[in-house]
Structures are given as C-alpha cells and as structure tokens.
Length: 381
Ligand SMILES: Cc1ncc(COP(=O)(O)O)c(C=O)c1O
Image 1 (cartoon, helix red, strand yellow):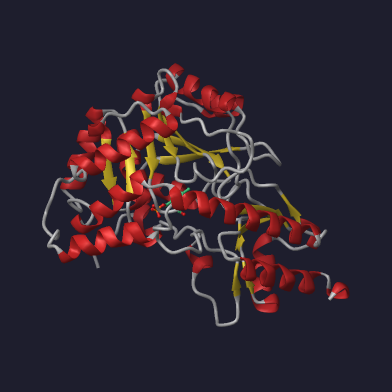
Image 2: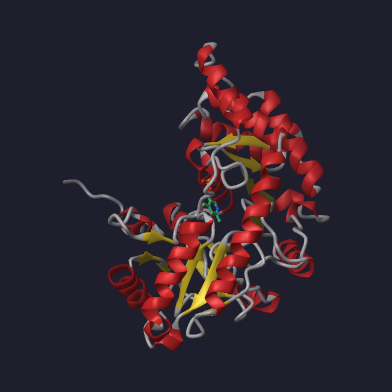
C-alpha cells in the first residue's frame, strides 16, 4: 500500500475511546451533549424545508438571511463587530475550527493552546501540519497566566487558541485575561482562534468577553460558535465561523471546494436557531440544578476533589487521593462501579483528573454518583 502521511496516521480520536456506547447497565457521565430534544420550531423549519423541495445547491457560506441572522446575534449578544458577509455556516463548530486553523497556521507554525486542552484542538493543529504548544493553566483555577503564554511565544508562533467557557476544565476566562491575550496577539501579530461554543453556559459572575469585541481584536480573531450545545443540535452539524470579510471570503472558497455547504434544508432551521434563544433559557435552569446536584453528591465522596465549574457542563475531579491514576480510576469505575467517566491524564495538565459531564439528566447523575460512592466508600452504603 502507498504511504499515508505520518501526521495523519498519528491522529488520535480525542475522547472517542471513552465515549463509545458502554455495555448495557453502565451509567455514562461522559457525554458532552444536552439531554434535551431540539426545540420544535427548529425541527419544523427543517421538515418544512425538505418537504417543500429545499434540497438543491445553494450559497456556500450559507444563505444570506442565515448569515445575517448569525451576524446580528454575535453583534448584539457579544459585541463582535462582524458584518453579515463575515459569517460562514459550517458542518458543525468542529469544521469551523478546522477552517480557522487553516487560516491561522501553516505547516511548521506553532499554535499555543491552554492545557489541559480539549483533544480535538490539539489534533486539528496536527492535522494541518502545524505544531501544538501547550501552555499549562494555573492550578486549581485552570485560568491562563498571561506571562506563561508570552513565554511560550516564539518566532514560529502564529496563533493562540482559547476556549472559554472551557472544555474540559469549566474555566471562564476573566475580562482581564481576555484583554491580556488580545494585547499579546497584537504585540506579536498573532491570530486568535476563539472557540465560543459554550458562551451561553456560564454559572459564575464572570461575563463572557469575546476577544473579537475588544479594540484591535476583531481583525485577528476567528470566532467559532454554533447552536450544537445551546439548542441541543449536536447531530445536525451546524457551526458558525465569524471573521473579517476578507477571511470569510477565503473560508467560503475552502468550503465551496470541499463540502459546498451545509444541507440546504438545514439552513432555515439554523436561521430559526440564530433568532430564537428561548429554549436555552430553559436549558440553563436545568443545567444549574444538575450542576448543584452533581457538586452536592461529589461532596459526599470526600476522597474525590471536584473543582467548582464556572461554565460549560463539565466538572474536573481530582482522583489522586484514591491512590489511582485517572486512567486506572476510569477503567475500574467502568468495570467495578458500572460508571463511565473520561480520564484526563493523557492530556498535559489533566494528570490525576477525570471529567464528569452533568449534561445527563437528574436520574443518571444521581445513579452514577451513588454508584461511585458505594464503590469508593463501601462502608457508607
Ligand atoms: C470546546 C468545543 N468546541 C467545539 C465542539 C464541537 O461542536 P460541534 O458539535 O458544533 O462540532 C465541542 C463539542 O464537544 C467542544 O467541546
């Protein structure tokens, strides 16, 4: 067989190995998606579009009304001064991230990532032939230290990637931190890739600040967003890239020459999502309850040390007091407690930690945590 390039052969599957459907009876505290259904008005828009023949080729970036709706949302909600033609609607936020990487780095360039990092960010840097450079966040806040980011900048650095609220740490970066990152990017003429998929899911008093909303930030920031997590649309594969027009035009050509566009009949649905954020408010209430439920149950297992998450729907739990490393913990939790969790010790900065998701519904959280408690503290059961 002819050669497959090494940087592709070596691509890892991210958390995939731990997200595989487990045997029956196992409680999953792993899944990074809302345990809700997509709101009815969004579903109806797609059904109507497919029934009325909206099944043909269309504008690659997404229809103008769709792009305008997302541009308006990003302008009004987060102060990102993106024009309507600065939007490209992509197959999921992941694809928007990949386009952002293609714009922000060439083979041989270095992209700075905050560690522990969501594995897909690292893998995508590798995918485009660039080098991921991991800058460890502070412990236990998992917030970045601007001086550490600056120390990691070299002549090869072309971009800084941030994800706030963060997967897997739940950290929400402060306004000062975001300003510091924008200042660094301006000083060293770098791109910022800002993965803003969880911005509606913030539980602390720290408001989300988009780097593209800061003076001098927009021209160098590739903002990634989309309705997957906010509108329970993970399987629809709809994402959003917001950038200066010149950049969006290039991305439009990349998409036009590859997947063409997202399915035509999803566009009216994605437009409804951009305009209707009512469901997110309801979801937020559920997340706040589930987060409190999971944190409360974790407190009853003193051998596990959980960090209070500021955003997203993940909790980082330090398992080192059990005497196990995170991978052993996850394997044994699956085999002995029938609970699936994600070990983070393959991620630099995640050593000794597992990630629990509270996107699951209340019964699952209750059952999963009770099982962990009985497994770790059999004397209490
Ligand atoms: C940080 C982060 N960015 C992007 C995505 C992907 O979003 P999408 O499903 O829209 O591709 C995820 C999904 O888990 C995520 O956690």
